[in-house]
Image 1 (cartoon, rainbow, N blue to C red):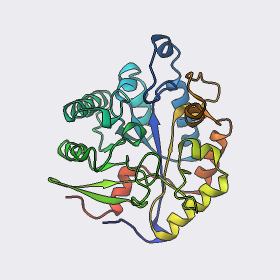
Image 2 (cartoon, helix red, strand yellow):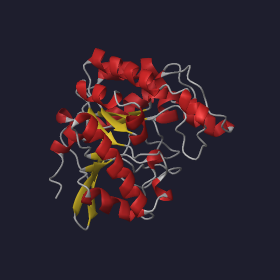
Image 3 (tube, rainbow, N blue to C red):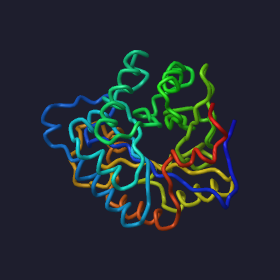
Image 4 (tube, rainbow, N blue to C red):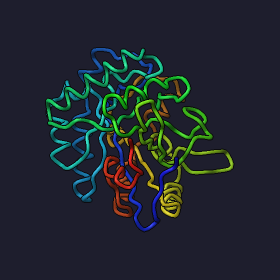
Amino acid sequence: MLISGSPESVCHSLTVDVEDWFHVCGAEILPEYRRQSRVVAATRRLLDLLRGQGSRATFFMLGEVADTFPELAPAIVADGHELASHGWSHRLVTGLTPAEFRSELERTAAVLRQQTGCTPLGFRAPRWSLDRRKTPWAFEILKELGYRYDSSLTPLAAIGDPNGPRAPHLIKTSQGSICEFPPLVAQSLLGNLPVGGGWGFRAFPYGMIERALHSCQLAGVPGVLFVHPRELDPDSPRLPLPLLRGFLAYGPRAGSGKRLEKLLVSHTFKPLVELLESCPPVS
């Protein structure tokens, strides 16, 4: 079931994957990388930007980041943002067993509750690594643990299903449904393009992002953007990655802050949990 409303009532959502500059899936994390952490300063820079525009977002918090920097999650909540789960270790869900996935969710939720009193209601998998065919058990576990929504499925050929829904929709489990919020994409002759975040947000012309959001508005569905703190920190270190992976993870970043600020001025954004109010009841 696809979820939509009237164009006049549509708000978009900005989401943040709270992870450090070295949290790149499949890359080895050396001890010296952790000593060069920049996630607190970069996230505070993003919080300042949102506060200046009166915008609120959903922050998908990596459990090990929250545990290492216990001041960060409370600062996010104090500014009126939503805390959601990004798992604990930034490992791909497709590389976890069901028991390991459950443990990561429970461990992260426990830390966030202890630090803020908030229980996460949403989840995003590292590198969009949920798959309805390969990891159907993940949605069952999310529902069992009380999660109301997920934002891990992309309508993209490289890291998802190019024929998947572009609009929010419900995923059925044996215990009821969970709402799925895909990231914003732009339709083109080459297929769906990832303008809503990551390298696409940084590299594609700004007008493509605006047009994609406008298309969502006309369709009565929210556009979901996503950013990482490192994208507002162009001077942060970089992992020694192959050329293509390095581009996808880090470049180009210099104009990301200005680009995001322009979008915050032009559009209304709400945390994902508040967009659930416009969804059909999730049983």
